[in-house]
Amino acid sequence: MGCGLGKSEPLLKICHKAISAALLIQRWYRQHVARLEMRRRCTWNIFQSIEYAGEQDQIKLYNYFGFLMDHFTPASSESKTDLNSSLMQKWERYFCYKSIEVTKSYTGPHLTFPMTFCGVSKLVEAFKHKEQLHARYVLQLLGETWRLLRTFPNISHVIACHPKPITICGDLHGHLEDLLLIFYKNGLPSSDKPYVFNGDFVDRGKNSLEILLTLFGFLLVYPNDVHLNRGNHEDHIVNLRYGFTKEVLGKYRVHGKKILKLLQMIFSWLPLATVIDNKVLIVHGGISDTTDLDKIARVDRQKYASALRPPKMKVHGCMTKMNENREREACGQVEGRRRVCSLTYHSSAPDHRHDLPRRSLNNTPVCSKLDLSVDEKLNSRCRLSGFDQARCELKKSDSYLESKTTETDLDEWKQIVDVLWSDPMPQNGCIPNEVRGGGCYWGPDVTEEVLRRNNLQLLIRSHECKQDGYEFCHNRRVITIFSASNYYEVGSNRGAFIRMGPDLVPHFIQYQASTTCRELTLRQSVGWTERSALQALREQLFVHRSDLISAFQEFDPSNKGMISVTHWASTTERVLNLGLPWRVLRPQLVSSTQHGMMDYQQWIKELSITETQN
Image (cartoon, rainbow, N blue to C red; front, side, top):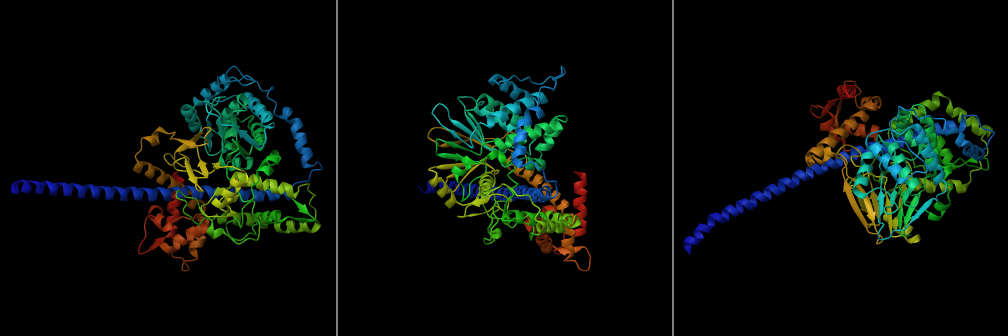
């Protein structure tokens, strides 16, 4: 017996050492994964902060140009209603495709109308092989789409039945490869395979027009089984900044302007929401505490070609508060870099800016603000052009034309903006969405109330990129679905779509369109996206170099070119207002420091060299 025990002791020691080694490896691996997760979240915040700051810039610039359009262009003797009516009557002459010849040298797809499943399938195959559709067919297809959309209600109603599960897709943003992958995995749209596409078909990606033409083709063939909701990027003003306008003009140099004008009309006629079995509401952005589906159903949606531009109102000789605020922003009179409120929220309510959550993967609130240079430049341009004086003269002379816009129009516009631009937040309540500059942030209490009031059980929305392609929030009563994989960079996120049967239980299908990112390890993927995010951040720093130098000089009275790292971090945040952990990012952005000090002039030069090389 004693001999047996003696033999087992070395074995026990070996087992103990093996277990200790396994625990050590496990601990090391967990720490390694945790570090990668921290880097990934930081990378995500960089991309998202830059994206939302760009949307803020877009709205500010549009306020400026909108002010010019409102007050410094000759007034037409023809009313807006008459102009719209006249445009509708003349559209066939302006958008006429019959005079455009299809030459024998054209090797792309030929379309026949009415569209057939075979015709759309050939169109999909052509786009898969990077062929371009002739301008004649583009205008003809868009014209047919415009005619059809005018017959649709604001809210589409869909019934889910057992042999026909409904597929719901989120943002595509010009990623044709994602749409083709969805069709490969799920099948082409048909009477047995209904689809809901939840807006943001265009911008950012390179094939926005091909996505539109594909979806519109299937819509013409299956008008009762293909449903398209409008997104905040189905807006000609947003398209000017985010690439779609440039894409169309580049692909169709002769007829591009006509195509864009026709698309502007089409976007304004896209439905605003879809309801499945009277239980599931699908909108692009979200809701607010004032969302009223009955009002949305009655809105004259085509009036709002751009949701960024509020209707003008004048009551008893005075402009409304909203237009006053818009004028103040256009001429730089709103203090600070951020909008005091979002597009639809102009009130004397307490300032919630410091409570506003910057959306991250784990919904961690991060303070974010907008770039000062936009306000400064607008303010400078206003002064140079004498806008302040002109605006006062306009008010004194009361020279504005009376508008037929009513409080109802203003309320309708707010309903549309909230549906297109809003985001959920973890806290209860409803506050201005100052991060984007439009719509609101709404909490779980608002979700519960809106769903209860309309006898709904689930809200599906898109509008936000999610790493896994989807995300639940608000006690699983709200789903965010995002279908553009690799949105920020290759490997940054998966895409996903939802399959929903008559039980209304969502089933998620995830994918990654790029074969490159599927071959990367987690570490390689994080490293790839991190480098891309840091490069995008350096570009932002380079753009604001003048503002940064001026701000740094406040802490360098002797003009030695040196400031502390602490001052660098706080000043950089004050100028860019991106809500980022600058001290954590400093090693990746600043090449060298000495005793807690850095040469900011040399740092600016290094940014300039990096930008020149790119």
